[in-house]
Length: 61
Image (cartoon, rainbow, N blue to C red):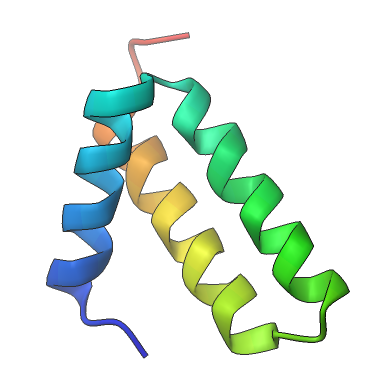
């Protein structure tokens, strides 16, 4: 399981590289992991997506 620091580091890097499309990419990764039966990895990708949503803030679309 990833630490909170790792989650937030990955989330920040993905946002910097891909913008807010990174949230959708993380969600797609989670679905792909679930499809392969990798529940723990899917949970981590959802955690990353949630961290990106927080970083995005309430004032962005």
